[in-house]
Length: 106
Length: 121
Image 1 (cartoon, rainbow over the protein chains, first blue to last red):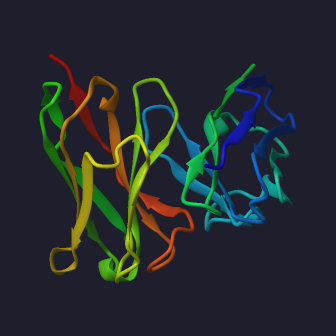
Image 2 (image 1 turned 90 degrees about the horizontal axis):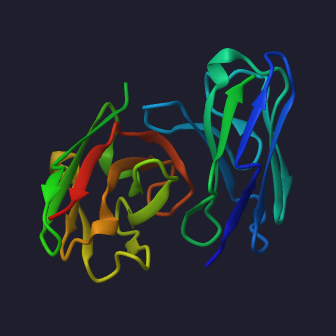
Image 3 (image 1 turned 180 degrees about the horizontal axis):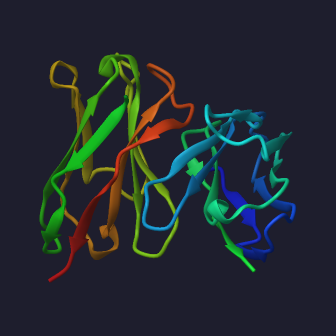
């Protein structure tokens, strides 16, 4: 089974800050990596697919990068509406989620 | 507008059974693989089971293999999850999620709102 290690598990940043979340796969997953955003009390929502492709309607302050085993989600200028928990997910071998990163405003 | 609506959750005793349903609308249901994903209270997301749209097969997480069965009725745009031999650790919100691909797993572009399953005596 492929394990996905996300870090940090939580972070607190100020509005306008650059925020980076990392996700490491236990083996090479090529570019089979997605990111989801879950706001408090809501269902998850697709944010980025195939490492770096933004879903329609997702603000351009979100971006994804990486390949192989190491991946990054970046928010270039954190906004109040970005609070929530972010999950990476691999689909190289079935589907596995990372443990999540809770993002709060300082 | 794509919509997924789950139903069938509730309180069940350990060892009991429950059948979840997920009805899709606003898209061609048979053209998309579907999955169930669960989230225990206060915890992260766990993929549970996959069903290919047109013969892509079924797959299960090890934690539910042999106890849960995924199926679909494309004529009714509905995905099912039959859950037997339920355990306390199956307590979670269960989401159905639409895959981008018809027959393989590539990740989810739409999610339902979830249905809560509580396994407790």
